[in-house]
Structure formats: C-alpha cells, structure tokens
Amino acid sequence: MKKYKITTKQKAKSQSTNGKLDMKTLLKSDKAIKAIVFGGISLIVLYFLSATFAPDTTSHKTSPNTANESNQSTEERLEEKLHRALSALDGVGELTIVVTLEPTGEIRGAAVIAKGAENPVVRERVSEITSRLLAVGTNRISVSY
Image: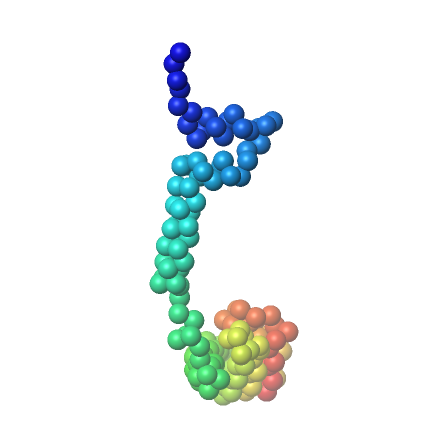
C-alpha cells in the first residue's frame, strides 16, 4: 500500500465544509502567509512614498499681509489693463478705476469714474468693456461721471 503525504492545501480542502475554510488552516497555508507579508510590506512602502512625495502645504501658507499685498498687485494690474482699454474709447476723458477682490482672489466688482460717462452710450460701452475684461457681470460694475 502506498503512503501519500497530504499537503497543507489538501488538508484545507478536506477540512472545508460547504466551501468554507477554517481560519487556522487558512493561516497555515504558505500562499496566505506570503500574501499577508507582501501586503504589509506594500502598505509600508506606499506610506513612505506618500510622505516623501506629498506636497509641502506648510511652506505655501501666506500671512494675511502677504495675501493682501498680492491682491493689491492684482488689483493694480487689472486697473492698469482697464485704464488702457477704456482710454481708447471715444468720448471717455479722465478715468478713475477701482477694482475690488475677494480674499480668495476672485473679482468682487469694479467702480469706474469717467469724464464723458454722462452720455448713456459711453457709459454702456465702459460697462460692457469692463465686464468683458474682468469676466464679471455688469451688475458688479458701477460706472459714473
């Protein structure tokens, strides 16, 4: 009579009932141990990679003064851009332009004081050009003379 050596896989298959495996036999199998070890090592490697290549959020934080300064420079650039565009319009004289921004940097609105804006056609053109250049609705723009 031949003797057969029963492997761990065969024990697990023979001890399973209705397709369910016993946890002890499952943990004794070589494949399960290899999978657990591989999974653990993979998680550790992923953790260290994410810590190494994650963006440094602490260095990009700005103080309130820095944020205000950048908003001021953005406001000034927008005001200059508007001044150049509106100065070219017929019927527009001396200009005073104020652009306001939200703390997030979005444009809150604009106020334009222009000589010649007493003419409704000129006022409408100034409002429309300002709206297009700033990409805001005309309801956020005030034009006066």
